[in-house]
Every structure is written in C-alpha cells, then in structure tokens.
Image (cartoon, rainbow, N blue to C red):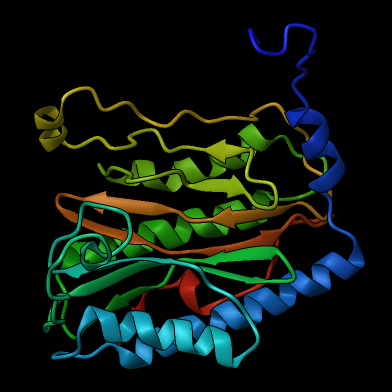
Length: 267
C-alpha cells in the first residue's frame, strides 16, 4: 500500500464464489469425468495394497492410472500403519527416507485429487489390509453414517450449517476425534464444515498452540449444482478412518459422483 498509495483494494471472495460455485451442465460433465478417473485411481490403489508392498508402489499405481485415463493428479496425501493420527503427504516425499512397507493389520489412508479440464474431484480411500483392529471398523461405520447424512442433507435450499450438523450427529454415538474438516466446497474451496472435536488428542499438548480449523460459510444457502467434498473422518484412540468423495447439491439431496472410496475398502 505504501508503493501504490492510490490503489484501491476490495474483497471479491464472496462475489467470486457466487459466480463460480454453481456448475453448468458442461462443467458437471467434466466433473463426472474427473470423478470417474478418481474412482479408477482408488481401485488401483486397493489392488496395489498388499503385505510387502511399499507405499510408493500404491502411490505410483494411482498416478499411473490417472494419466492412462486422461486425468491429472499433482499430489496424493497418503500414510499407513496399524495406528494413524496424522494427515498429509507421505513423509518420503519430503524426507530422505525409505517408503514404509505395508504389513498385515495396516490401514492405508489417502486423499486423492483427480482433475480434468481444471475441475477437481476428491476421493478418500481407506484400505484395510487383512484383519485390522476393531476400532478401525467402528470408526469406519461412524464415518459412513456421517457421509450418508451429509449426502441426504446436500439439497437445494438447505443452509450449509445444517449439513455440517447432520454430519456431526453420528459421531456423537461414541467418543471420537477428527483430523480435518468433515466437508468443504470444491471449485472454489471456500465453505468448510468442521467436526466438534477437531484435532482433539492429548498428544497435541506437546506441540504447543494447535488451534482447530473453524467452520466457514455456515449461513450460505445451497443451490443445485454446487460441488462438495464429503470427507468424514473419525478417530478412536490412535486409530483413524477417513472416507468419502465428491457430491453435487441436488434438488432433493446430494448426487454422488463416486462410490468405492465412500466405504472402508478391503485389500
């Protein structure tokens, strides 16, 4: 502002969202293509997941599938293990270390970003390797119930806060925590719906001031053709499950663009 004393700055975020959030028929067709590519990527990840495989092999299977099916993916969030409390890209992408080897009883959690024509869909594959701890199955059931509630609530005329609340309700059946938001808008990424116990782990005290992500856009009325990523995540103890996918706002409820990552996948 010192260098441009006569410049005037105006916030345009709300106007931009209003002009771009409702997709045309052509844009919806592009999104469906993106979602179909993402669906294939998740299936390829499940097929590549087995005891003895490296995380990098699962990652490579997804990227290869995206390219072979005329889609694009710049990065995948991925982690694995018999316990899982973090969220982010695999550590071997930013540290000089060997990718982890998958073992019996592991769960592989991932967030897949599939795009085509500059429109992105998101997919949340959770892959169980053999006999996993019962807490994973319990968390998956709660996350699936939250997902179903969100799909039902994503209808034109609803207020976003009501969608968030609907997704929170199943999580109250058992003490659990969340690693990241339950739902957010896509293209553009503006509205965020957080769970009630986001990052609620005692271990966080060691990291200093860790603040939860707030919900945003709670009072916005939904319109048919808006796009949302439903990503309900439920942590029980040190075991976390995240699942979900991309859903359009419909007149009478959400329109799902993918299905295989919306349930616990079995390797």
